[in-house]
Image 1 (cartoon, rainbow, N blue to C red):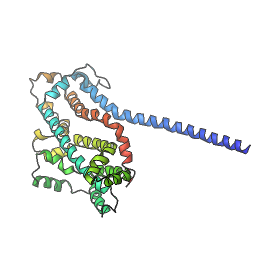
Image 2 (image 1 turned 60 degrees about the vertical axis):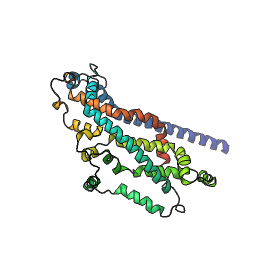
Image 3 (image 1 turned 120 degrees about the vertical axis):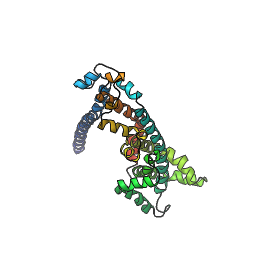
Image 4 (image 1 turned 180 degrees about the vertical axis):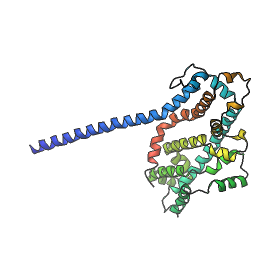
Length: 305
């Protein structure tokens, strides 16, 4: 009898935990759904405005669905050479920045992932990088450094100041440290050196972490706008986000000739909405391909110091 009573007690406990777990899951999904809607609804509104007519957008009739559907704003945006120039500059920046960031991140994270017995003063090197996350040289000294290096008005002024993203280094370093040491030891016994171990073993096994920092790097370079305003003297060298910042702050259609036929169909609001959505589109396209690696790489790269 005591055994049966004990079993019934455990069964009730399991049922209570299951009910609580269900309540937690339902609450969690509801909260996350609301948060997701709060993030995506503004983007849907911008998209609807960009496809709406000039009069409908000006009257405030557009909510989550286009009114008087038209592509005039996109045609006008793609006809602006400033927008296209900024798009090309951003593509160059992403390509160069990604190559530089990933190469230096991998080459920095690999030695820092070793034990102190393999790399003397490992903690000193690690703190050398961590300090840069806490303190920086300041805006004016950084500008003076870029100027004295002759990088002003150059694409390299947008790439080199952030060549070693320390947060990504820490993330990848922790992921490297989670890999089984036996694989590395077996490779060394077969005559492999550090270069071969890094590129043939560590990198292929670290695809989730590499995909995660790839997403971080692409988004950071694509969305950055402030450095373009500081380091570029010519507006033709502005990356896309810097150009968008200037047109959002100041109306871009004021300088348009009155004989432009598209101006009669495009308002300042629909024009800006079209450009904002076009600027966000590349990240929206890339993210689904990296999302399956994102959570695994982020979690596994942050569990060990």
